[in-house]
Length: 288
Ligand SMILES: [Ca+2]
Image 1 (tube, protein in one colour):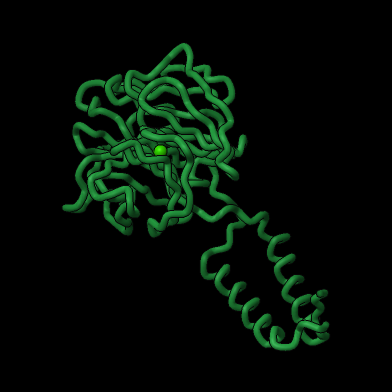
Image 2: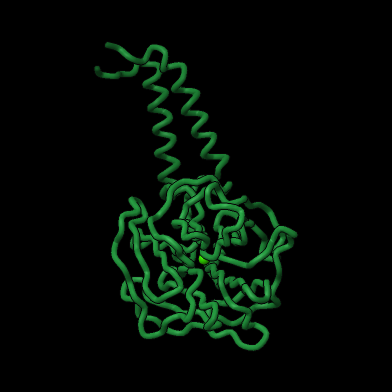
């Protein structure tokens, strides 16, 4: 059966299509919805993808990861346990894309990841350092070593476009680093009694905030540690699960926000406009 549209609806649909085309032309491309990738570390759960409210979306078949990263240029998701070898997955289908090993610099105990548009970075908890590597070849260099009071067991790592944030597991602090790895200002803490262990970090390009994993929970915080959002881990990942790997999808793309992403309010208005136009036409739109 063919489906056609009567004149009144057709003209409105054309108008809407023209409007949306104009919106796309003027604002660049639509980006994927912003989501959060988590690698909970208890009982070897998979890497999971949730929305900003913590609702489960999908999962990648890597179990027991301590770090996860999004590599947009290769449309790939990277996941790894504490050792030196990564598994890669197609970001769209989550089909396996093979593995990648780092050389010559390897972490002693690899944790969270970040991506600056060229390199991937991995926090090394017991090595008190950050290792930088090429996402295509695995060629790695030492990017940063934490010494003295700053050697707090780095776990979480996020790239902001102009530098990094690093969470310290042993000292429960978050440091800001510049693009060269130099410490900026003083460390800060997450201002919540529910915050326990300091885990994975991701940078939210939508509102320039940080997402940080802890036990059974993820917080959204300002860059001074004030809690502005968050969620409990979705079932069945559980209240006792520590989130040591975290990335905000689109957050680590080449150092710039994903331009042209409609604000949620704009997207909602478009959907409402479409819904409002489609509903009256739906009653009689089919002609057999
Ligand atoms: Ca991260």
